[in-house]
Length: 345
Image 1 (cartoon, rainbow, N blue to C red):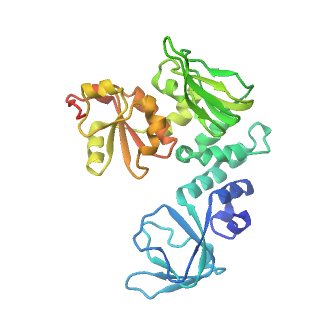
Image 2 (image 1 turned 90 degrees about the vertical axis):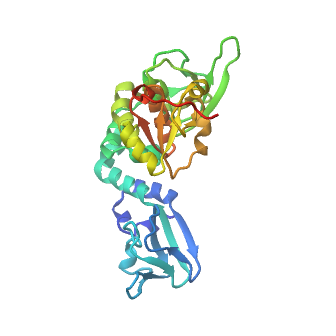
Image 3 (image 1 turned 135 degrees about the vertical axis):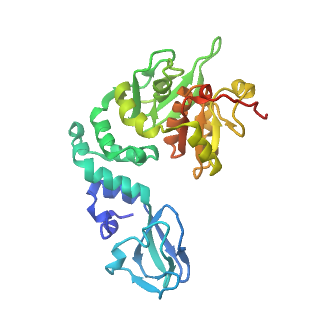
């Protein structure tokens, strides 16, 4: 979508050009025929709708209908921005609409107005596109703007060549990495066998967080498949700027209340540990399988992760938060709970 179209709307017109262009790439233009419903009163969906062309009927219960025409003053603002929606919107004519996620817009406004100047000055860079791409990932929408600014200030660039081993299995964990350019491969060596390839990463992907969160040695190696550029964040900065906002913990009483409203327990320990005893109605998604199984989880549901203590569940929460899931760590894990029940397998 042409960024110039976005600039006519409030508050998109307050965004800097680089951020507006990045937002335009993620916005969608939709066309609806006359009579089609755009949304209903009391809906609580995540979208913002801006009217590009045509006329919309805005109907609130027990009130006379109101009409909004493209190009008017009313059309400069999103339709029924408050939640739940205060009225229904129906296409009075054929309409074209701009649709964008409100959380994404709010993240960009915060980033642009609170910290954009400092971030764009980072390292003398005249190309903030990679930073904006990172901040468009689901997990980074949850990072406070001040943390995002500090994160980019503290990243250290590391140029790499094809074949470079960035992380060696068995080493101590010291850094978190984001791939700015290039591709990398994750592999694990098993005793007496050949290394097993676990995953492949590309631009925008992060790695190295698991050992930082669990305090264990590196459990896999990461090797560059091409020349590239990595951005490296120290353990201390990772803990302060990323772990704190992304890994949320709850105690058992809070978790119990969340379960009553539809949250799901997830045991991230190994299958044998799960079979030996777990919490009632929990799923078993071992940490080592989590990247492969994450897509099976419902993005509309809350998940409470646990392990024996809370190291593995913290690593699992970070991985799932990066994929936009609403996850929480059970503080203290099973060690803090007296009654552990046999799993139903």
